[in-house]
Image (cartoon, rainbow, N blue to C red; front, side):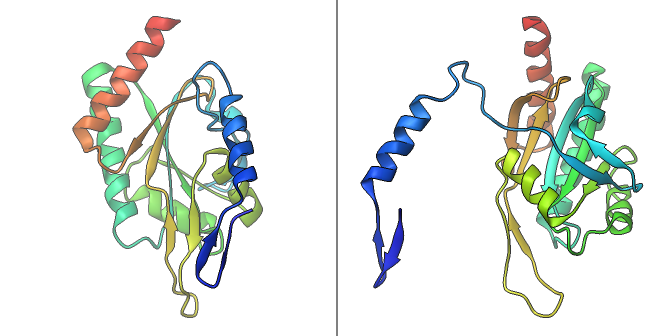
Length: 197
């Protein structure tokens, strides 16, 4: 157990040792345990699960519609990359936005938001419990910051997840990737994936 006492971080080395053993005993194939089942609502009000994306390549970004700058920048990059990937390599990528602000991000709010970026961008939201579950499955960090009435920001991971046709995790792309790096990175991953099959 870790904790702070009198401003000093207290670390339980037994926990660290056990955590290290657990990491060493993880999957041997080298695949990260990212992704999993989810049950959310799309921006048209329909229930959606991970099974709805089977057979297609998906690029998933977690964010929130009231985000002042980072989410819009990342979604513009995602939208541009999806078009460039199609143009350069002929691969159709399904862009997906998952809200980490279920309190404010209603179906209608998400619908209006995603259509600003790309006609094919699918927006997903859900109950706080469902969002917590999908965020945990994708190893996404998010936390509401200081609130003033209903005006608050949500601190969150800034990552795009490339998921394969069987909704298995292939690779993540961080904020440092520009449109070209994201485009080329996705194309390379898909080509490698197809060569292994």
